[in-house]
Length: 423
Image (cartoon, rainbow, N blue to C red):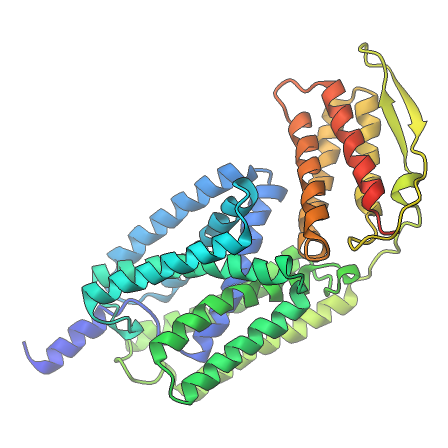
């Protein structure tokens, strides 16, 4: 085989994109899409975490089969895998944290060790960790194992910084963005390309999550109140345009030789990446300015009237919740959650468990949407309320729900909301 033929063969087998400005923009935006879509299926659609996890693992497995069966880098297949890996990587960390109760300090350490093991085995087997060397099935397997682990590690480390250390998503954008900038400067100063690439890859996960939270969260929490759906559509549109361009260029010119500039030239790549960032900033802030934050209900949690279950026949009496005097808490005003809780409690008191089950869905969605804003304020109190909301959901969604159980769970939740309300 001639040298030119060998070059063409190895080029044909290149399975990952060139590391360009466009690459990093798509990567960051894919992170937010992945996390938001998983939450949408689990909470808004109502599939729940177990069904969502199983579904996403299945879809990811199918995507990997397609990716591994392709002979060259195919942008739409590759980036579909990245988005799905983002979802599954996030779900793995959430499973450890929320289901198993593993500390974020522990999970971050564990995933860091796992990533180190992947890199060690990869290097011993292949003698290189260079991204440009991903041109055999085994190397591609190591590559995707590392990618999945970086998403899990990035999720855990990001949650640790913004939640356990109470940095919040605004500080998260600045801190993780600054860390990526320092990584870029280190590379320019002569640091290892492989090392700086993987450090940046881990950091883009919490940066993307913090950026998404900044756009989606209510203005009460310091966000732009764009909403999860609008943010996801905006990010997806930008990703679609950039990946389509990559696909067209790859189909037109083939896969670029290793070491060559990006398809379309570096100037074109910077221009498209800059246009993507500009679209997110301009449209994000533009749409945010059109969003009106509804005036907060002046009633507090303790002002809600709550029905109390009566006799076993299902009769109920309505008793006002006495106002408790308590200091403001870090969680702030919880009235909107209490209002929904009071509605659920009223329906339970009338033994309208079907109506209560329908109404409690609004509480689940509202609570999930506010997680990024509330959780960093006081993770302990947030977890307590989260557990009590889960108890209410479980009692109402049981195969044969009991009015007494539903009433007890709802009353406990209302009492805790009253205690934690920041007024």
